[in-house]
Image 1 (cartoon, rainbow, N blue to C red):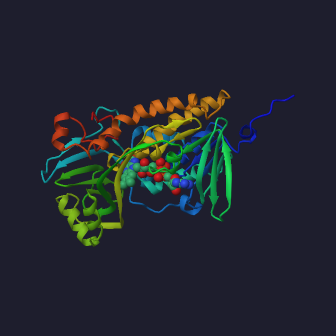
Image 2: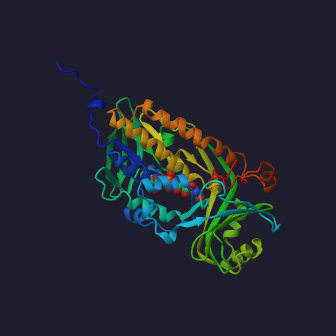
Image 3: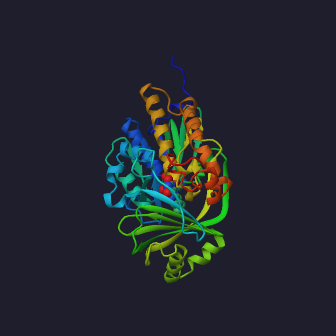
Length: 393
Ligand SMILES: Cc1cc2nc3c(=O)[nH]c(=O)nc-3n(C[C@H](O)[C@H](O)[C@H](O)COP(=O)(O)OP(=O)(O)OC[C@H]3O[C@@H](n4cnc5c(N)ncnc54)[C@H](O)[C@@H]3O)c2cc1C
């Protein structure tokens, strides 16, 4: 007589992996898994039109060489329009109004540039394009994940579509890529170390009459910092970090007042400046999950490690995590192993923690070391650690 299976085990799986969140991390994972013939369902609360063509959000993402390698492998890099990829040749760190900066370049790394800058919405668009038409990927936009349960046999997720209908989906593994304030992380009983710096960044694009020379500038002033990230076409991304109350007050400034202030802070090094688009405000909150994996559950992207944005690490770390986790799942899939087992996932925890732990303590400690400390340590002021070839921080 056949052995009766427990009810949960008898429930068939809908897919191999359920991915919560179609942000850049969730989509990169779906693509990497599809390349390894692993099926996934990707759910996101945002509708398809928004995911396909996201609006500019003011973030210009500094990409490392390693991130570029992963993006090429996943078919993302080729989808970035050439004009949208700005090379970052050098970085300069200024102390107050002292016009003599510290220089950081790629010398000795064998590369021509420190990295590249690409707008976040352009990366998101390319990520969405890279998962289209793949049989192994079932995209469910406009679908909010309501909760999940994990048991010895599998993971079950409950979701609601835009028309109000609810469904459950079951798979051997759930991967949460649902942002730094991940609800699924909490539901999985995984805590996180969070630090609210009480500071915020204001980001925007500005055009200028002098060339940015593809050189980033980080200017430390009393009470605030101002970063210039060189973009193409005579524009730069401006990143102002100040106490959150001041940031809110500055957001009420007119474009003219803000422009005049930035020009003056930069000592007019970029000539006449003018605003391009809106100013966006992001509170500085860093998050580091206490665990990245549990039986039948894993965290990736900001849900695992939500960095202080000024460190320029978040998306890069997300890609590194996707690279490691997808390789482990691909190997397990080839060997016919259960993808949700902790033994399969544990090496991701170990490697991602090793990779992100050291850098993530820097923003937990402070908002970056001063140029004086940087000079003493011979490091990159904690701000430019995205390029380890030049950073000994
Ligand atoms: C100002 C700023 C500058 C930055 N600069 C850099 C940089 O230079 N370099 C760098 O590497 N990184 C940078 N980052 C970080 C980078 O933007 C993030 O790390 C990255 O966008 C995180 O991607 P993600 O996919 O993990 O999460 P997100 O982009 O937050 O996506 C999460 C997705 O999950 C969905 N979701 C959430 N909850 C649910 C639910 N219940 N049901 C369904 N869907 C859900 C959301 O709709 C969303 O689409 C910066 C960030 C900021 C704010």
